[in-house]
Amino acid sequence: MSTEEQKPERIAKRLARAGVCSRRDAERLILEGRVKLNGEILASPAQNVTEADQIEVDGNPVGAKEPTRLWRYHKPKGLVTTHRDEQGRQTIFESLPEDMPRVISVGRLDLNSEGLILLTNNGALTRHLELPATGWTRKYRVRAFGEMTDAKIARLRNGLTVDGVQYGSILASVERETGDNVWIEMILTEGKNREIRRVLEFLGLTVNRLIRTSYGPFTLGNMDEGAVEEVSKKTIQETLGGKFL
Image (cartoon, rainbow, N blue to C red; front, side, top):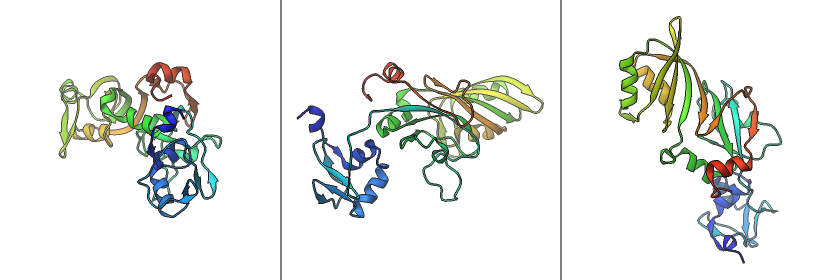
């Protein structure tokens, strides 16, 4: 038996890595009695398994872990970045090609934001890339109504506290002004929920267009809206090393 086969992991993680469902959905399937481990119905998701264990979901054998894959996706406005939306709005996952495997997003863009989202079939990779400690910057082009001054740029660079939420340093530079609007390039490493919209509103500007142009070394480039392009294994190896392959 190989070292990989001997290494235990939670069964929910195993099901997610095999492309069956998310970890949360895996826990639900287990509690509904729909998962068998080595021929016995599993009663609790608090169970570690190895590659040597036989797992079935609804009577169907679960295959081996899928190799790590990564895609670039150009999210259009009007889609939400979630697998299920309580308000019935269309999600990015509903707009993906039918031959795509089950994927999860690296971070999110809100309903009215657009641009680059990374998609992967590896939940551990998602969490790694979302961590501020990973050090990957997110770059945005932002159109906003209002005036961007040197003083406001300095405040962004020094970090802000808005409604009790601390936002780290954001690098901002004015690209051009068009009437009452200004185009700003903004670079940050953390990416809290609606961060750009909130800090600019705090400074007296109203965002009316927000485009993510890069995430770490991956760029939006000239991708059409709604387009999906898979990242090569060579590029994954060069940017992430062998850990996730």
